[in-house]
Amino acid sequence: MELVAGCYEQVLFGFAVHPESEACGDHEQWTLVADFTHHAHTASLSAVAVSSRFVVTGSKDETIHIYDMKKKIEHGALVHHSGTITCLKFYGNRHLISGAEDGLICIWDAKKWECLKSIKAHKGQVTFLSIHPSGKLALSVGTDKTLRTWNLVEGRSAFIKNIKQNAHIVEWSPRGEQYVVIIQNKIDIYQLDTASISGTITNEKRISSVKFLSESVLAVAGDEEVIRFFDCDSLVCLCEFKAHENRVKDMFSFEIPEQHVIVTASSDGFIKMWKLEQDKKVPPSLLCEVNTKARLTCLGVWLDKVPDTKESFPPAAEPSPVSKEQSKIGKKEPGDTVHKEEKQSKPNTKKRSLAGDSKKATKESGLVSTKKRKMVEMLEKKRKKKKIKIMQ
Image (cartoon, rainbow, N blue to C red; front, side, top):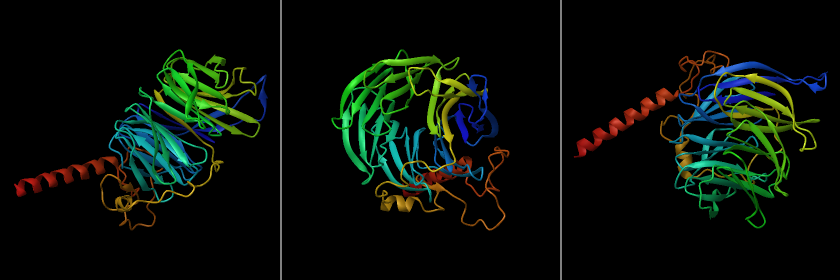
């Protein structure tokens, strides 16, 4: 098990988690050990997602970087988007969905790392997306004041709802029978069967992260040091506890045998792991914490196991003719997947290690760096300008 967290300082942190079997007094104690720090992006990290093998990070530098957690090496980068990456979600181990400020939602094959489908999802920015547990539907919200439902089987829009305000978070419940839409400090709870609001919860401050702990219990964090657990049926606050010294930026929850854990990351630099009680009216107990001394922005937990979700969409989204052309290696255009270079001839050439010096050039790794990609784009623009002048 490994915690991964991104920050404003462009670094991805990795901490190995060692659950202790022995209890220390009345409280169980876990240990966090620093595993790696990796400086891959050229701007602050904005999103992170995990599968059973890979961790992917999105950034304000408009790229998505892929890390092979089993080999502890950087695997490559995806460069389709032309805006800050705002959200990343895996469905099983076969598909990744990304959203960005360019208004696009992209569906990626997480084996070949090809763009299967690129959808102009919102007139403004895509601020968040969530995949239904069945893998057949997804929800997205954006700065065009709409909530959009997507048919992932056919890769098309299914429904558009005007919500009259810009929502910044949307999240399905574990069984997919309801979902929440977050606008500032307000939580609207929708029922899937009616697609209408069944209740509204108001938090004290602007909300930065929500996580369903069960079908009806929602953990809510925001621009404050307190985390609250709400009952989505009765709309009451079950409990609240002080988690950090500054605002909570992100949360992640998971279950392992006999344990239900929630992880929190804050602007105060701390990542904390909490043991949840069966009775959610009882505040969780602290298992462990670590100070990264960085301004954390996003969080994930790599569990080194296959998730319960199916491997692929039922059936998997098929690549469009456009995305087939875009995914060819060698052309450095938006939509390309950055892979090993085709002409790489040295059999002993290794990809960049996460534990190594991440500031070194990527010649040895066979990966195309962000800097090199931008140079190629600049040269392409200059060439186009010359062609226009000649034609004139």
